[in-house]
Every structure is written in structure tokens, then in C-alpha cells.
Length: 352
Length: 165
Image (cartoon, rainbow over all chains, first blue to last red; front, top):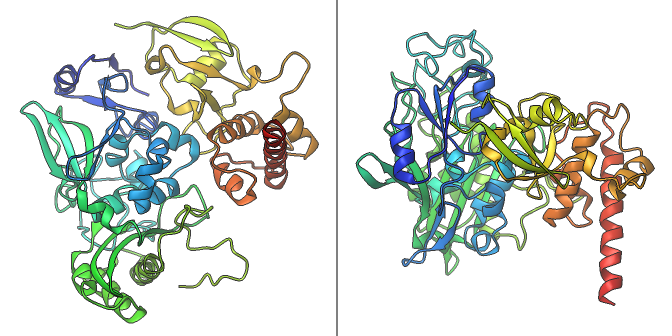
């Protein structure tokens, strides 16, 4: 690991000032950053440790009925906060389907939002990667790419965003509160991320020094609490990143869908909101035929970036499955295997 | 420049010089405090061998910078037994053959202790397996590990019931 200066600011403005210098990076739990630094993928000259900043570890109700989550709230604490999990069950399920208990105990809300892709070529400093070294090329294009993006990718980069947490968050119109050199501003989480286009190194709209201080869910995000699920296909049952995942949230009125929210994970360089699929669902009957049409709409623009044609049909089926599960109602308690399509109930069908 | 931290390690306060900020809690425990019970497996947060409790919560010590944890209360595998008397989890791992080579065992036991503290898994073997999925065992002693954790959970549940009754 390259050496660095360690700075521990006492206030948010001090942090922003310290992190505005070239080569500076924020340190929260470090569960992703330290891994990247050990591999030489990230080489900051200065670490600005924000874990001791006061007031960023609270979960607070908002006047509009929504919630404000401090950037330093740990993933496990948010998932196990009883009132949060009751109001936003798909978010809690997504959190508990990610990483391991040890990592969830450490990892922060702000850090989760800013975690880097898990593309193996991004991690391997001997490989060409436009995201890591702009202009160097993309070894994933001709490499092992069965898990890479099928939506929003470019010739320069086919990496995916790894977060589970962010998938239901974009579905529920989460907003990120950012403090920067120019003061505080709000950005929709969906707009925080940039698609790779010809500059994959610009992963977000954040400017040097910008610090995520909180995440907010609007008042209407809890309207879906009775019919909300997150579903995630992995290559092993637990402790793995998504091949494809989906958050499905429905608001049912008199037996039909009044409003729907759909987002996909593991398919693009950002958590992917499926607005067209939501339009298909609105006003429809909550049945397999409607769900299949929505899934077609969600993946309408998809194309393989390598050996990953299978992910497109897999994603459609996961959308259908997530919608069906959401329609049948949020379970009383998060299942023993959160977000798993594989039931631990003997005799239950596993095929979508 | 901050160049020293103070930690409570297994109940003992330690003041530690940290001239290099790159030191992880794992390396600090093993190299500076000679507490080599905590193992370095992958060193990248993937295997769980380095699991310790920080302020009562299980984390991967390989992905935690020591300098960021000034004032923390740390429990390692060395802090569990009371003299010759094993912690109930240690005894249960022996009773149920929860290991073969033993390299992952300190991490498994510290993770199990964290899992019990969290109070989410209860006596459901599926929830225990899921809650322990951050600890790999290349000898594949998983069946014994789950039995050992279940055993301790059942004993705790029975004790709790007796106290209530």
C-alpha cells in the first residue's frame, strides 16, 4: 500500500477543505477503499477520516413523512432499525443480502453509495482499464465478461455497479445530501451516477471535496411497504455480488396496480431504474401477463457486452419473480436467506 | 500528526505508537501486540479469519485502519477463555467437531460471538448459516460449526427461560 497522510477533521467544513486537495480521498469504514489501496487500485496521497465527525450517524424522521439517514449510519444498524425496516422493507432486505455480517457492521451508508465496481480488470492493475487509467483500453471486452453490463455500457467500459442497497433506493426516489465547497445541495441518487460513455473514470457527479452527509427517502417511499421485495441471483447462496437483482415495489388499490417502482442491479454501471416498466404496470392487473410485459419493457434497450446474453433473459425473469413476490405481500419478517430466489422451504419451486 | 492511539484490548488498556498510518487492526494485534490468535487469511475482507469484536460488534480487522479506531474496545480470541476454563463457544466447537485444521476457527468463534450478540438468528440453523457466511472454512467443517453455534444458542435460550420462570 502506498503511504499517505492521515487527517482527522473535527467538522464537516474542515473535512471538505481537507479533501479538496488533489490526491485526497475520504475514509469511512474503509471496507472497499482499503481493499483497493492494498491492491494498488486506489493510491490516495491523503486520507480524510470522516468516521469521527459528529451528527452523521442518526436516522431521523422528516416533516414530509420521509426519513433522513446520516452518511455514517452502518449498514447493519439501518437494516435492523425496526421502524426503518417496516417502512422500507425492500431496502432492509437488500442491505441484508449484501456482503457479510462483519462487513455490514462496518460499512456505512455513504460508503455503500460510492463503492467501486467489482470488475476484475478494474482490480487487476496489470490489465487495461479505462475506469482506472483513462485511455488505457478495456481488457474486459475480450476477457471474462459473462457478469458484465447489458444496459448503458459503452465501448470504453462494461463494468457494473455492485451495490444492492442502491437498487431499491433508486426505485424509491432517494436523494443524496452533499456538502461541498459551495455549500449544501441535494441530488437524486439516480442522477449521482454517470454512465461510462467515453469517460468511465467520471463515475459520479461529485466534485473534489464533495462529502455525502445524508441520504433521504421522500414521504411517499413508505406507501409501498405492504408490497415490496428485493431479489438477487448470485453464484452462491450468500456473501456474493449480484449477477442480476431487482427491487419491486407496488401500491395496490382495489386489486389493481396504482403505482409501481422497479429497479435493477448488476446490469449497468449504475443502479438502473426501469421507468418504462413502471408505466406498463400502472393501472394494470397484478398478474403474470402484466409482469412479463413490464419485464420486456425494463430490458427493451439491453444488449450483451460479451458472453452475457443470458443476463438479459435472467433479468426479465427476476423482474417477473420480484413483482410476483411483491404482489403476494411483504413477508412479516425478512426471510432467513434475504433476497434469495432459492427458498429454504422444502418442496417450494425454485424455477422462475 | 496523530501518531499514537489508545485501545482496550481484552480488558487491558494499551497505548500504542503508530508512526505509519497504514497499519490495520489485524497487523497491529499480530505484529505489535503479539496476539497471533487472530489470523490473516486473505487480508481482503473475503474469508473472515481476522474477525474480532470492536465495541462488541464483529468486523474484519484486515479492513480496519488502526489509526481510525482510537479509543475502541477490542475483544480477540485470546480474551474469551477464563484461565483454563473455555468459553462455551470454544467448548462447543470441540464438542461438535467445528474445525479440522483450525486456521479459520478463531475467526469463526469471534463471528459466532458477534452473531449471538446481534440476536437476529435465534435457534434457526438457516439464519445461523446465513449469519456465518462471512467466515470461510476450507476444511468445510460447516455442519459442525452450525451445530456448535446452535448448541450455545439453545443453552442461552434455555437459561433465559429459566430466569424468566
